Image (cartoon, rainbow, N blue to C red; front, side):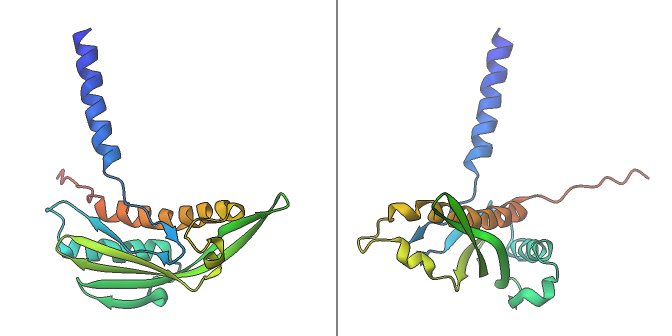
Length: 171
């Protein structure tokens, strides 16, 4: 019984550590989406963040070189993208899906990076009251918008955080 309890405790600790290391989330407000800072262990260098951000871009785009807007080695990577069915408005029990063009700007400094999401999409400005609260009929639109952009952010965070697979030389 002690072995089972100790095993469960150790498992719980590891699960807690795994779940506590999730990416911060973007939050849509009436003013737009604020940048998010991703922090990493001290062992992650600026060059590793830059390299992994570039490889993430290459995995996301069909033609990665054509979507790069800015590429400053070890400082900044900015690329554009397009998402089909990025957010929806539910009207009369029918989903109206909207596409979105965006840019993601990754600025790298001291083992962390600031990720800024920008879009030409401005429809969200009418989703909010003057005091900043969401209009009830647009709750679903805000939720789907945030889910879409947070999926991008989580994907980038996971790519940067991943450790390279070690290959053993069995010669």
